[in-house]
Length: 326
Image 1 (cartoon, rainbow, N blue to C red):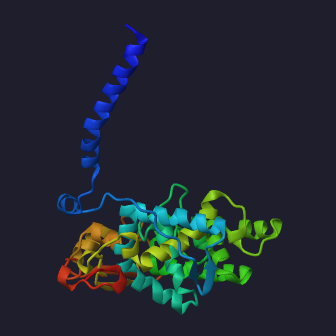
Image 2 (spheres, rainbow, N blue to C red):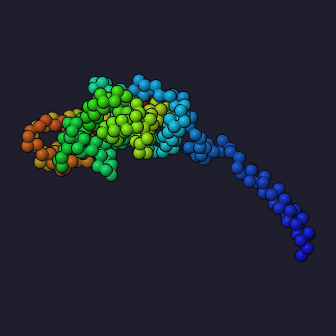
């Protein structure tokens, strides 16, 4: 066939195809907000959250207009915003655990913002355990837990005891602050260890840990903490919409003080009117099927009340009003 003839034919054919299909493609690509709302519970739109010009942490104002600070903050805000289930669970759990953590921080002279450290360490999961062996809501390693007053052995592991572990975290944070005098550096030391942060501050001749060249985990850690505060302080801004009834309420518990061992925890739980699983859930520091207590220490066991164990959504109250829409 004549090449001069082929070129006009192909051009005409292509023009017709595009002309026919383009309106169809564009028509299907249009966003119908009313229809989309009917078909879906969540939006399919994806937006980048804005990075604030500055953020306050533990009384210190941190400007975020410097390129490295801004981009590190941006990365962590994106992570919190689009790791939907993890962030949503943290908000729900905060309603149960912030009322426990906050008074302990205050009593020990630790800034309230450090409650967000428990968020980034464990997602406020009191049963959390890392592959490296860190355990509990505050993710203590065994040796560090013992160093700061926690009982850790095969029978009892107080890293899983929320109140005791929070007090131990306070002691660690206070020690670090005496060394650095900067709360963001204290947070970095919680992740990397005091020895490493002190060494790097000296070697790199930096004043604060945020200005150090560190392994990625620790470098991100400080800004993850700031992002946790930003998102949990204003969840709706980042797309998290909850009602009060969807939060996890505090569960009322009775207590039983014991100074002797318990041979069979399943039998003990049955006597108290709860299951063995419920006993372990509220006292995860009990690591075996019995409580060994040769030294006759005093232990306080939490026993969920029957009323507390059952949800009454209409009675659930938001600990912070900015978490909910109602």
